[in-house]
Image (cartoon, rainbow over all chains, first blue to last red; front, side, top):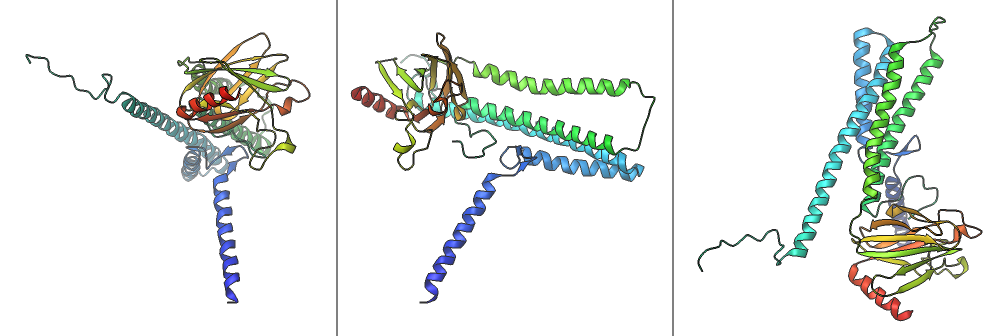
Length: 131
Length: 230
């Protein structure tokens, strides 16, 4: 009997913590305070690809030339090019998907509107001939 | 709707605003990369031990830093012009709403079928009921049907106002003696808020715009009830 109210309070506290955590997740992380990386489509992938490309380019250059500063410059250039490339590729793919999505939505709406009428695109023309 | 300390755009409720958000993200990423590059360049310049007192010019780098910004600007301009022309497309509106700005309230006229006109005043803070938003809610809302292109004709009665609803991607000046036109399509039902966006006097901050989007069948019921009331 003594544990009942305390157990309920703890359960409520755990639920509240869960809600706070999920609210924090939804808020997203703003890179340099401006770009919301989690909620902007393609941003997270582009930055991760950029980080990977930068590390690979810089490391390879250093292994070949043993020049530290120049390798940092190459790594930075690799970051820029990989991020840009990944970003544009992902955005283009998303844009094509959105166009297709709109066409499908339009098609579904038209099908519902025109079903059973002469304008129904799924109506097959009847073959003409002697009755 | 807007929340305190908000930095980004509100979620889109119209196809045009979706495209604007896409363009904004695209330009922001480019701006972020350019800023990072500038920061890195400054850091490198400040920390380098190399000095060359005889350098006057360098054709190579000057070519690069002329052509690269031009390419970046083209990459930004192309989607920008695409969205700009998309916003100006005429798409057979199903409804026309006339919006007139006054000091300090908005009035709306639905004159397609019958003459429905009403004023929209902000609800004062002391008269708010729970669940109403301070400085945003109005006594009468501009009601529009969802999934229907709506044409808005905007003008003003006295001084210049501006009607803006960020989530719909709508912002248009209301200029006395001039009729401005904009169109929008609301994708899903809801209540959307905006505020006057051109300084117009003492109560410029207290003349919000409230748009309520409802399915077409309920829109017909609403217009009938409003006509009966008026």
